Image (cartoon, rainbow, N blue to C red; front, side, top):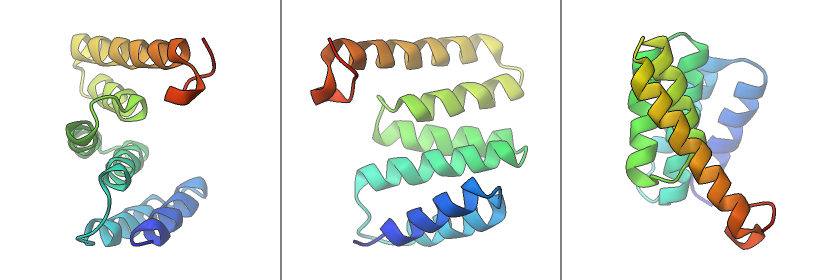
Length: 120
């Protein structure tokens, strides 16, 4: 499927700590017009994580915000956003963001496997 190869290449590069290569693969994915929204969420979240590892918290925050604009319930994007806010010294915003991530996870666990959680 369109975009999956680029996401897989980016994931491989990230697991090996090759952040620039990961960002190039994610750029290739972003250039696809027919990438599904959930792929875009993953792409932006991965981009945010790569930027954090490279020490670019402002770009990480922008990427996490892009992911959350598509899926406000993305726990992973919220966690990366929270880390970026800490790096920027925006501690109160970070706490709110991380509290929301925890609430999302608690609700998923409460709802069970059908909703991505572990059980009721």
